[in-house]
Image (cartoon, rainbow, N blue to C red; front, side, top):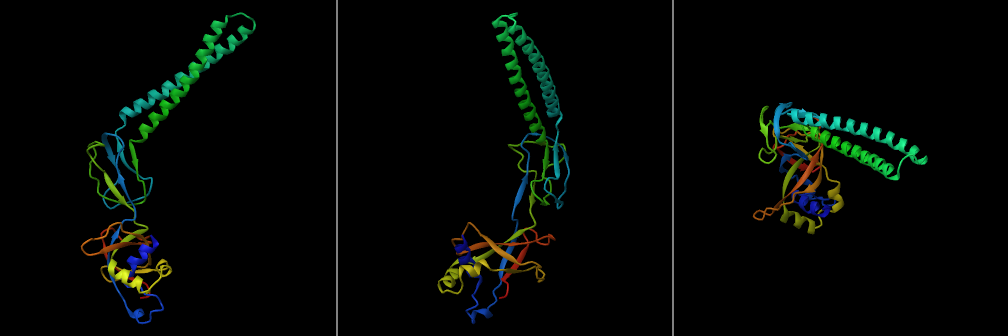
Length: 271
């Protein structure tokens, strides 16, 4: 991967300090800001959306409550599971008392082995019954949690694609919204593969040079962005017609100035 980044970045006319003539070159490449990470706001269950707690362009923190889905039925199921757990606890407590009493009776030969075995079996079933009800309660609590959708990452959220009162379908409705991470953020820079290969073969730069590259970014109004970027990945597609590939340059973006879709210009810092 590092070598391939070196090949592609070479298309931006990176030159090593030993090439004095080329040091005077200043090549500017075009790029487009793209999200480093995205997260789709969606539901794991069908149901009626009872509340939406965000609007387009809001910055949301990871964990923020975004959407609520009507939980009337799941609340009843949860209450039932809790009641069944209490019942199972009471049955177990009673079966334990019965077992302890019969253990004393069997020592005095005051009860048959068959009766004692039945009491012991009933206690074992009560133990298993309690474990089963604990699992049922856990399932009910998990189902209940699906009715509240929280942000999976911090970032800027899109407009909701549904409204309160909408009946959401997992199979048909698609995503409710999208969150894009703003910090850090990436810029996709197109580069010419044939030019890059030629420069690599000519020895104009080394892999170590590429690892240490820093990029300057210019905004559409010509202002220089305050942070430098570094290459982090190679685009997975090459254009068969133009021979162009792409490199992803990562920038710190704490102020949120860079937004996905913004056209920018890039050049290697110092060139």
